Length: 131
Image 1: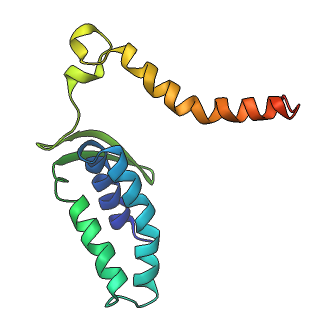
Image 2: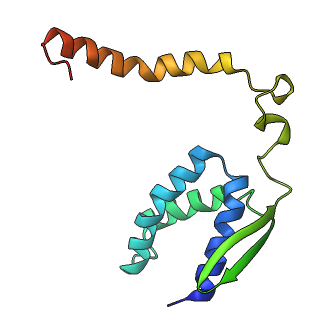
């Protein structure tokens, strides 16, 4: 219904993907349906809409840049994006020594995230429920 709005939204998301960190992006995605519901139902002047607006405004502080989109047969594709506020770093994306990522760093993260699964498995083993 709004092809122009869809194109603008797609381009904005492309810039957000390089200027927002994962946690901020996920939180914003969680807040947007609530925000849309408030606006749709006419609650523009409510305290909760104003609180959400402040959070959304804060999330957009570093979101700026250039996006190149390709439009073809009703589809939109990002073919380029850049921002002076980009979080992307060529130095950090490689797994070599100069990349800044040491695979040994992941060991603690993996153990910590697997802790709950290990505890569940031990409990289930005691109860005779091995699946």
